Image (cartoon, rainbow, N blue to C red; front, side, top):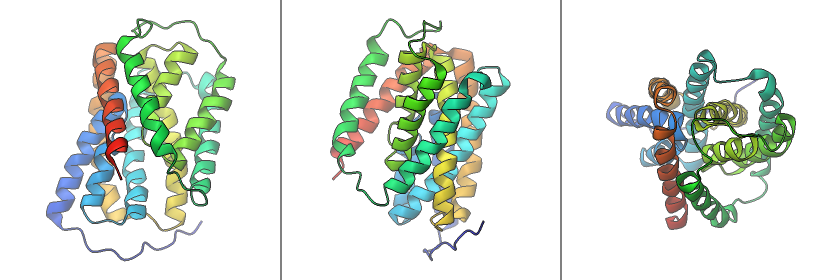
Length: 259
């Protein structure tokens, strides 16, 4: 496996790298709780002067560190059932690779119009639904079918476009598998890590990752994700529900106001 060299970019100053690292730490904590860390990290990378495609690839690198750390913590605390999530993990990887390849041929502009409406609908559901709590509910579909439909579908979306992936996974775990919000968040991080690593692989192969920026941000993401995942395990629904609502609405607003 050969990684192509990164195109030349202006050097990021130590002061700017310090700011990016601090943003990554905060993004990692938020992402471990409710998703949406990229809403902070990606604009920060663009502000630092990285071209959009390099910012996307570098964001996948630093985000992979965060989702890996959160996933490890949830696994260590017994929140993940590997037997049931095997098919969703495989199909999420396949979907993310497919989406990453597809977006290179087809524009994603139409999704910018649809996704905000879906996220607003999910925010209202998270806010108002009495079904969401600390207790599991009856599942509506099997885990293999969940993998085929949701794992592949949202994995494809994450590779193709991305904003709100965590909210979509969390809603699917709650609505279709009956997971409580803590378990849904844990499962979301595992599948989000899967889609991140799949996309990162192809960005890296194409030489679209600025490693000297992404690695320090990734280390900060690990710290933030460790803190955030501990908060989820300790506080459960009363912490996750309001943050899911805020993150979903924030991503919707950003997409609606973008050109």
